[in-house]
Amino acid sequence: MGRIYNFSAGPAVLPEEVLKEAAEEMLDYKGTGMSVMEMSHRSKAYEEIIHTAEADLRELMNIPDNYKVLFLQGGASQQFAMIPMNLMKNKKAAYIITGQWAKKAYQEAQIYGEAVAVASSADKTFSYIPDCSDLAIPEDADYVYICENNTIYGTKFWQLPNTKGKTLVADVSSCFLSEPVDVTKYGVIYGGVQKNIGPAGVVICIIREDLITEDTLPGTPTMLKYKIHADNGSMYNTPPAYGIYICGKVFQWLKKQGGLKVIKERNEKKAKILYDFLDESKLFRGTVEKKDRSLMNVPFVTGDEELDAKFVKEAKATGFENLKGHRSVGGMRASIYNAMPTKGVEKLVEFMRQFEAANKK
Image (cartoon, rainbow, N blue to C red; front, side):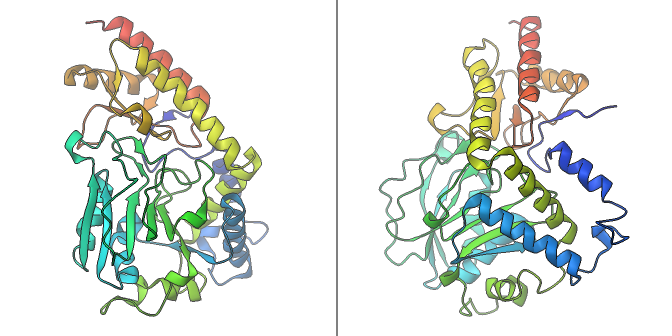
């Protein structure tokens, strides 16, 4: 069987040429006689891999010199604790709750201090982004937290919240490297890489240097201190070496495509194909307010659970994998990350048209 069209929300599709390159280097990386999997993270060869990966990411995102790039472990979920442990100096932070992951981060922060929910879209099943232009952010809040792209619900902050001068912390797991960003607008940008960049097991954390201090909450484990990782160049302990190597290859692939401006145009084009179909369809409909739609995750439903299940089953048989929506919301979801070719989205829409014709109510 050949490659299928994989619409998984993560771990997700990776660029084919990256996989082929990694396959070619599997037994012998650049004449070292071994795989990167087997290589000492203290070796010259590996040092070059991680340094090149960081340099390429800095170039892609135009990361200023006063920001550190950290390659960490523990998934984005570990950051839910690491952020308050390192940043909650006044023991207070503002959270904007636009989905399950923001909610989990908010709940975790309550362990360490006062987490204040300053806005939420829970009233309409997180199908929109609340107006964040004038929020009641506490004077003594250490930071304002958002999940910028909501993987489960398919919403995206197209305008960052007005943080009233407070540090913005953003989980960008599912929109990482999908468009150009102004890093200076954030104190911390972080995300798990398994959606848009690499294999599960790596978290990239881009953090402004003034936020990296010895002054963490009492009881913060050594491994959860940003300063430890920053001072040791992400090598305090053995990093997720192979995962970082694949991320590095994806960074090079993105540069070869023409960078994030080109990638964003491509992503807009892909998403438009699917959203245009959903907007005209008599059977399927998107579940998100138009102005807040994500380019990465597109949830949709027929309005009939049995029909949804039939669609997912027939789609799978046709070579479209992982279209079932998250267990918490049901329906369908197509994740169309950077590595999903335009052809994959066109083929999906073609299949949806046929399914609609065959299942008209």
